[in-house]
Image (tube, rainbow over all chains, first blue to last red):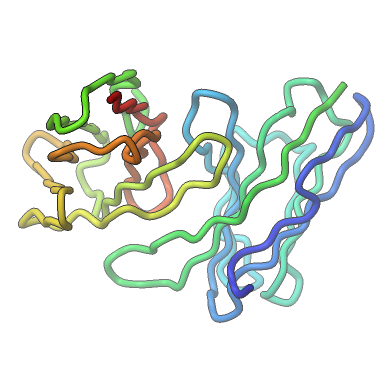
Length: 115
Length: 105
């Protein structure tokens, strides 16, 4: 399977714990995005990378969230001291930079439940 | 004002109906526009790009109105399988909240 893969598919954690998610993009894609989605809402942009550089981070993203893409390939999203409000689907997408705008390819997401 | 706004619906239409969704955007300098489709509990998937001159893909037609800062998606002869949430995307990465469509027999 050469699509975007995310791990784990589901994560249940207790409030206050740290969690880390992984995303493996399509291999030739240089851009990688993280989104958060709650029921009835569209995907909310969190951050994106071009190769290993984190180029934009949403103002809505608290400092408990951090993302890395150390070698410009896979990426991790860590949430420290989780809160119940962090419960959501975390989606990763990748794209190839294009003049007419990127077409995003999404992974199946990681569903986080904070108890 | 949100960057991208959509009528959340839901739109409930019979099979064979024509249905249209609009999506407004706030940044007049926006350059790229897309429609994505998201099935229940699945990830979004690209449906079609939206070009300045308008474009068609089978039963689907997308249009851009720069003066009024909105894009539209028209679905003709709707099928049961068109039931999904339709998301507009501006500048590649900013999603609207989505419009839910249910096509009924």
